Length: 149
Figure 1 (cartoon, one colour):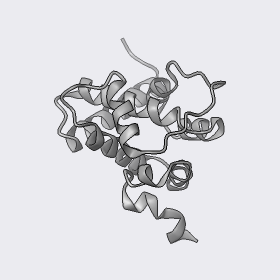
Figure 2 (cartoon, helix red, strand yellow):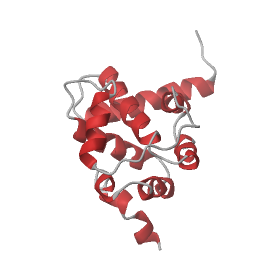
Figure 3 (cartoon, rainbow, N blue to C red):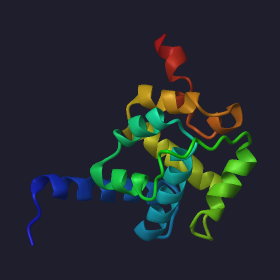
């Protein structure tokens, strides 16, 4: 079966993201990378304002955007989280592969997003997080606004 070029591109881009996440995070396979990416994206999305969640979603490849929006209830207010420990614990509870260290996997997903998404958008996302969660992002993403001011 031949796919339209736009579908083939998003499948290829999704495979690239999952391979990068799998390689950088020493994950077992693309299925494990998918589970990690899905859990972290959903948890991050649910902590952002409606506008910021949509802005981040627009940065994602089409297929990953579908994963990101899966099960989303935009009318539900953003869930505020104050501590890094609680965020890490809650991500690990959300259909997360058991053998994967959750804090490292969160850092790997955040690094993936920082690598592939617009730095200004990532800076906006980071700006909505408490200081403890900002530390999970790569330093270059954390300091983007300061370096470009």
